[in-house]
Structure formats: C-alpha cells, structure tokens
Length: 115
Length: 113
Image 1 (cartoon, rainbow over the protein chains, first blue to last red):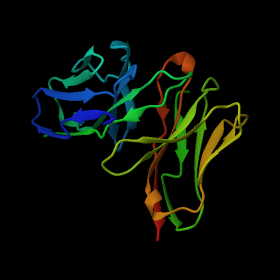
Image 2: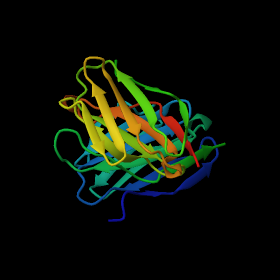
Image 3: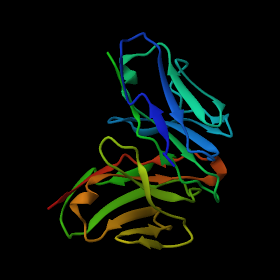
C-alpha cells in the first residue's frame, strides 16, 4: 500500500488567499484525521471523520477552516482566507477500526507558509 | 485534564546508552498510550503502545513502562543508535471519548556516534 498520500507537500501563499490541502487515506481505513503541527502548540487534532462523517471538529480553530470528506478515498482541508498564523505542517492520518483505540497512520504532511 | 506532559524536551545520549522519556497525565479515563516516532520531514509513526492492564511492554529495543497509580508512563530505548535520533511523542486516548488522541509536546532525541 502507498500509505496516506497528501498534496501538495509544500504550499506558499499570500495572506487572504484560499488554501486547499488534499488527503487520500489508506484504502479500507474507517477513520481520517487532520492535524496541525507547530513548534509552539505541538501536534493538534483539528477534525476527524468516521466513514466519511465528521465526528469531532472541536479542534478547528475558527470558521476560516473547513474540512470535507466526499468519499472514502478523499478529504480536503480548506482555509479561507489564510493568515500568517496558519503557517504550520498539516498532517492527514487514517486508521482502521481495530479494537478499542486505533493505530493512526500519518501522511508526510503539507508544509504551509502564509506570507 | 486532557493534557499529557512530556519530559525532557530534548535528550542527548551516547551510542549504546539508554534513552528514557517520561510522560504524565491526569485523566484516569485514558486507556491507551501510544508512542510515536517522527523523523524530520516525515509524519509521526507508531512505535509501540500499551494499555493500563499491563505494567510493561517490550518490542525489541523499545520498552514502555506504565505506572497506573502515579499516572505516568515512560519510553526506554536500550542500546540507543544514531538512527534512533528523532522526535518522540507520547499520546493518550480514552476510547469512550472517541478517537481524540492527546499528544505530548515531544522530545527531540539525539544519539551521538
């Protein structure tokens, strides 16, 4: 399996622009997670889906952030409008339903820089 | 109460030495404690995990020690190698609360050759 695929790997944009990050989870995995990683705040869960349905979006910073999962093989995280403080590495992860707590497989991340 | 504290922030160990990273939590409902390893430019990868019904779990050179009464758990890396140089994150989850994992702030480990 190719693992979790994220695109783009790097994104540089200007403040105010719309940014869309993409994720393809591992086939057969029931859960998909979006994380943000910064030096100051560490690894933060933004939102996660179960069978394409958003379960918990309490980590989404504000209304500028939105996430969708139109099908089992694709998810997007959109920031509109982007701000410099959104600069971070964004990870997508997926996990199979196995037992009580599920091992998460992370993608390589998208490094976002907002100038 | 949802926080996981991790120490030290950084650690330097000689090749062949033992690396020890500690984590502490407050929420007694946590019932799954994984450790993730992250190399620069990569996503975190699961290294080893433990549930509170056991006090220790070993996989190769990596061991988790778990102290339920103290609400602490630690990662021990025996015979540390330069290839182990990475950032290590502890995490915790209460499966009754869904799949929300709380991550520690991370420990940057450097193993000197």
